[in-house]
Image 1 (tube, rainbow, N blue to C red):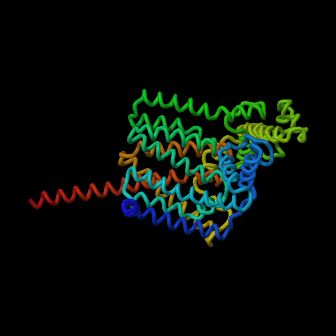
Image 2: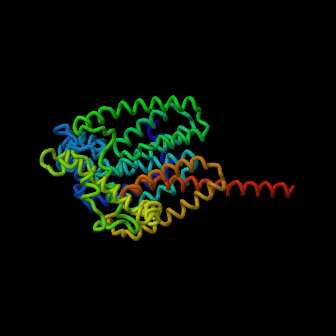
Length: 442
């Protein structure tokens, strides 16, 4: 007992700044939960995720929007189903979910802090974590969406990757595989991550033969894990769907973002899309009551066909406007945004946009300092690659504030590393000045 108390005291002493930040975050989360209530919902995707989990607990079927589906990865459905088996499907389930989400939000702060502690002291590592106190993060953690668990798993993935680059530990390699699979089962866009992990470890002089061997093992594990989900999808839809379907809808929505995109009344959807679509697609769209889940599947596939038609027309009509939309307008939505649809605790969205501006300025300064100093440039390149890859993926489809907030923690890591570089540059300069003064006095 005495040893345990001493250990707790040591942890508090060594990490008191971040414990203070987490304490404030806990208070803000509790106040927001009290204001919104346990059953607060957007009555949109968040509610359908809860229904999906309850349905899976009862029947073993994975649904979304009330039909059998592979539109979502089943990870969140599994989590909600597990809690539903324990707490039922009423208010107790909502309480359990809201508490779980609050804890995941707090844990993300801890992970970002621990990541920065790989490179710097407790004070500097805490500074970027203050941004997690922004109201949009607190509000988001009151919604049963994929964002909160995805940010946690994504931050864990980055943490173990950076740690692996330092210690080459087998334990971290295993944890990377686990976090990657869990993140993939929440959101499929993380699928591209291993490419940048591979490049980063090569830059860090990781043993190439060992890296190739570990990649092969990880690939086999991933294949084994995805096989049951892929088989299930083939049995239900008769299609090879290793992750999800439904990208056609965000792809279509994305063609209405930006400058000078084609107007609907200028296009011939019936002639150029519908009449050229596969016969099976047209059959299920014309007979929606036969198999509602197949109609849903093909309606989203049809959205994709329309999207590609619109993109071809857009490119033909105004290449500059389309490039400007996809390379500037949509990325900006994801970079300078706030996922904050309801004001809480009296905090206005205008305040959050000011915070975003501060974040971006600090990120830009940090990048510049790291490039000049060069000491942490490999880490910055890695963080930059995973950040921009996600921005590109989202900008190609539909730029949404929900998606942008999942990437902010990467900016906080860059800011923390940048502040540490500045601190060490000042410290080294002070030491040089002291040594010059000492030598001159002699």
